[in-house]
Length: 293
Image (cartoon, rainbow, N blue to C red; front, side, top):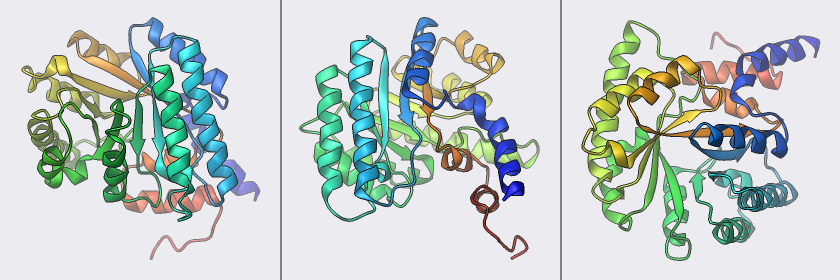
């Protein structure tokens, strides 16, 4: 138990600059500061361990309150909700009602809500939920991982004009290694450019959510015709040095601001490989595992 606590403390020290505290007030203060520097934000709460309806309702109430606070404080921020947080993996059907409650609050306050899948929810399920609500909530957006890019053309044809799309590699805190990482970066760049080409035909306001500043700079330089309509989403805690490169290119920036005590899933989510994710999950959960298997 003591060893597990030590490991968790070490991991937290590595990721804490990417988390805007443990309370909504601390996150709202961070959003206010970022807005003051001329950037908009996307706010989310870290609470992924959902195994009953009580926790799902708690998360829905948190997001509803978040939407009201953003409106009351006149902050320039959207909200990002993982469907798994609202109980979509529990199969009771109440998750749809909880999501609609959050969307109603955001609509009343004039905030965009981004939908993410979360643990246990497939991308197909996510897109189905998104499309079901487009007519009632036109200011809703959906996150699509770049690994889904081979189906981007079908997605582009199936969504309505001017839909909000956020494309991500889910590498918020991961850094590409030198050497083989350069080849991987080239492949990722090609995927992003293919996705941009397909999606910009239908969605002129597209967000690229990425943490690699070099990759984002290359995307921006190859997207001159679309740059004013592209937004680059960066993680909270992004270094000033990396951010300055993007600022010089005069791109639109949106800072993804997570807060909360349940940060383990977010930290694991940003690790570079499935193998490392498995090991990290074991360490943070304090479970035994055969790492040689």
